[in-house]
Figure 1: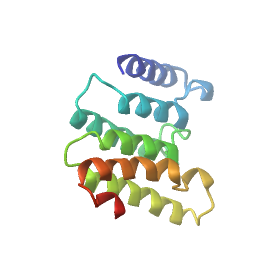
Figure 2 (figure 1 turned 60 degrees about the vertical axis):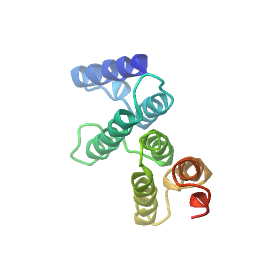
Figure 3 (figure 1 turned 180 degrees about the vertical axis):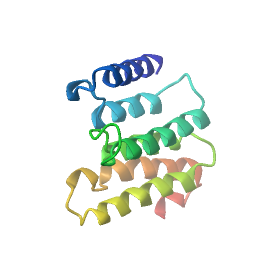
Figure 4 (figure 1 turned 90 degrees about the vertical axis):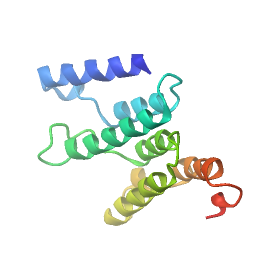
Length: 142
């Protein structure tokens, strides 16, 4: 995880200095960072969940037309990674479900026109895994 954090910080600093599109951390960069965070053995689950929440908020702010990085718009892959991070925190099901609902709404708001926002098995599997870990025997049936 530390290496991923250093890599992301370097990319962000480089982009802030050069303002060149090829230096901009993009959706793939941030999603890769979240995947590394989700599989981290170093940080505790609560810290990982908080970091993922901040990252998603930052990505949404950066990707707005007036934001500082138009290439950072989160997609279903990003949300799947954020869900994996969130699921590591204790008592996280409300937040996991909130992330799922947020992505579902973003997809509907896109007029179901953006396949990169479409929640599919990539997103539902980590949600089901979180439900099975956190909610007892029948939670995943929800």
